[in-house]
Length: 278
Ligand SMILES: Nc1nc2c(ncn2[C@@H]2O[C@H](COP(=O)(O)OP(=O)(O)OP(=O)(O)O)[C@@H](O)[C@H]2O)c(=O)[nH]1
Image (cartoon, rainbow, N blue to C red; front, side):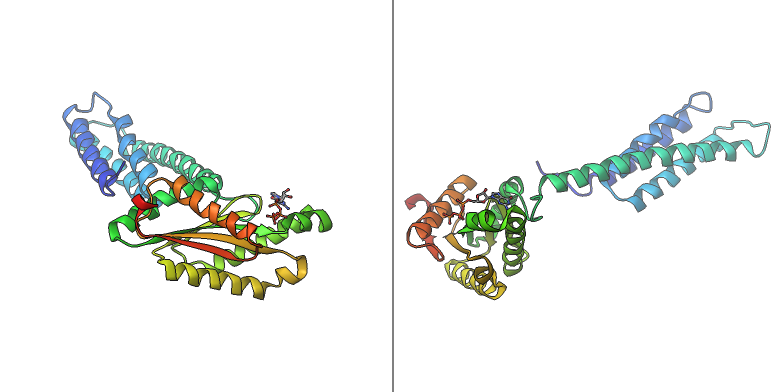
């Protein structure tokens, strides 16, 4: 569902105006203090720290002005300022609590989308980002390619050098793959020694250029000489990307297995100009 970017700003300002009016018209007898927490909560959840701080201050000022205009009488001159200070502290505490919960949630969401070993996108992130990249490609009428990569001979690294060295090799390969990709590409580790990449705005020629780039980076990394590994890749480039990610990845996966069966250490390509015919 699309959410308009200005909606939180408009709603918190409208709410603040309504609450201030309510506070003023109901007079000093009725307290409307709790309602001021609503626009503050919206600011803390949907905007940033600076706007939330401004909202806390503006809400406290609105509350104080209403107190003064409704003619509430105090024995001490300091009393309204003491009261507004307490309101300000309450507003700030609630805002800080909401900001903390939101930041923790953002951090947990980021962790849930990352592969714990390589810090690349994980399978969940890959699937959700495909929808975004595909929607952009369809809108711009640009092509898109999906690559599936699987290391060759990786099991031997684990067996001969140990799991920790295997982990290190996976990380090194992940980083070289990431470095060889563009920032608009989505690079993910799907599990084990399998990786997938969505090549945004990539024609058949760009997909071939990508393969050459990754193989050059791999040759330069020295991983082959040190551990005896290589990699097989399947790349499908689409003039119009399929809506279903499974369709896109299955085709690239099948090509990767074709490359494995045909002697490993190379890439199999396919270009799909017309999805209906594929
Ligand atoms: N070190 C390490 N190894 C892993 C991890 N996840 C999976 N593996 C191992 O990766 C290996 C993957 O198996 P295969 O793909 O069949 O091994 P391979 O030697 O590359 O086989 P081919 O693809 O046929 O060349 C298995 O031995 C898994 O135990 C991990 O997170 N760390």
